[in-house]
Amino acid sequence: MEKSFYYSVDWSEASYLKDALQAMEIPFAIEQPTDKLRLNLGEVAFVFPDLHVRDYAAVRELFGCHGKPYCLY
Image 1 (spheres, rainbow, N blue to C red):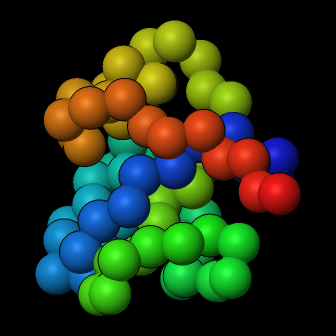
Image 2: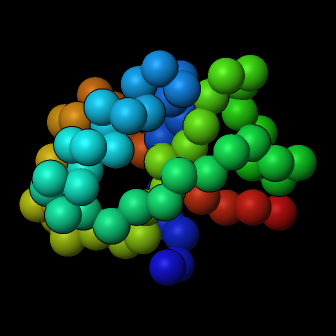
């Protein structure tokens, strides 16, 4: 999967979001913090490929904002 954007969320929200995304059949991966993907303590990242506009709108509504670009240096 080519990574395009991500959302960082608390672990406590991960299960609900995972279930919702699977029900919508939207492709994603869950990543933990690394030296290149910096997240706050207790957070994970939901990572997405480029999505169709309708799918992106559904994801944006689920997370409540636009995703962050996934560009690792």
